[in-house]
Image (tube, rainbow, N blue to C red; front, side, top):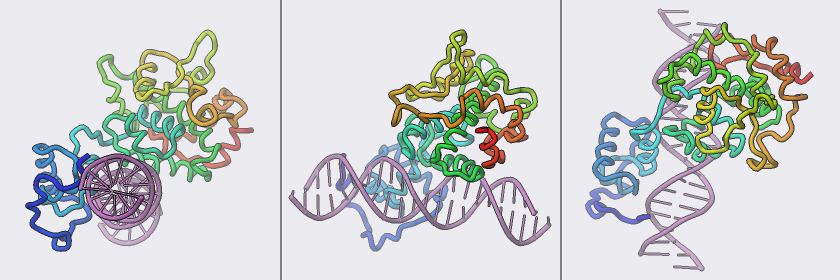
Length: 281
DNA sequence: AAAAATTACAACCGCAGAGGG
DNA sequence: ACCCTCTGCGGTTGTAATTTT
């Protein structure tokens, strides 16, 4: 790693004091300058890059702008159900290791995942009046939210044609009303209660778990919402379910259906502590 | 239609680690 | 061994956009 100087360092016309740094939102012109410079010189050495490109920004700011916004392979827009599932799984394993989690979601940035977690997941915990790190909330994620996501992926794959890519499921993430009215909860039990007659596929701990899950669902395989014993601390996602059994949750699901809301967006539904207590009775 | 509240997300900050001088 | 700079990460904030009242 080259940390000092740069090709144009001697040509730097301004001292640090003379060069007042810009802050706040980037302008289109700045974006173009940064993109043009990187396309011809490559990325890295951000401080000298900022100077050489004539940008009145810190190297840090340039790096962030490039990585989170301008990079050609960056994916923006709705987080798909597959990605949500993967984020939930990986966060349960690694905690707030956003960059590590982002490595397993192609095109997604750590910043975007972090924002997703804070705005969606933590909001959900707030509605439930429990801490996002609490066992209770983790159980909700594991036994209600994740199966729901899996069911959604299933529904999406059923509605899609054979040539549709997995990534395209993002289009179904919001507002697929037909799912709500046309799909019951019956199929969910098998997802977490694999019997000998229907062996389940354990959600993979590999990097592409979300996409792997999607492919398995497309193929009609059952998915088990547990991690291999060697993963995570103490042998898995949530060592001891607080619910009597995974299946128990689904016995109550018809009553809970109302709480999952009227729209397609899972996280927009109002839950409260009483709902969870009801589940645990 | 307007004001207030909420949400989403881009950007900044501080810190820690790596590595060269 | 120490200092300095760069890089990358996670937490936080500011604000534009959207929704609700």
